[in-house]
Image (cartoon, rainbow, N blue to C red; front, side, top):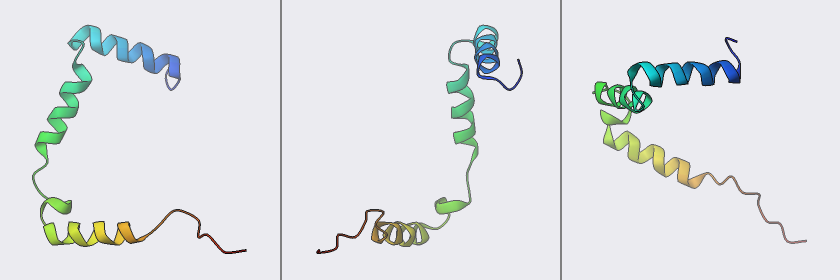
Length: 66
């Protein structure tokens, strides 16, 4: 069943049974706590510029007067 939805659900059930109902919350929290550098963490100004650039790019269609 490896690689199927049913297999994934079975694996999740096994992990929760072995390691507790909060297994996925714990591993997610551990990953978030490990990171200390890189990305926008290291450069606040870069984050500000990237956010401004993203804000200017509209994903909506331009309304054209008919």
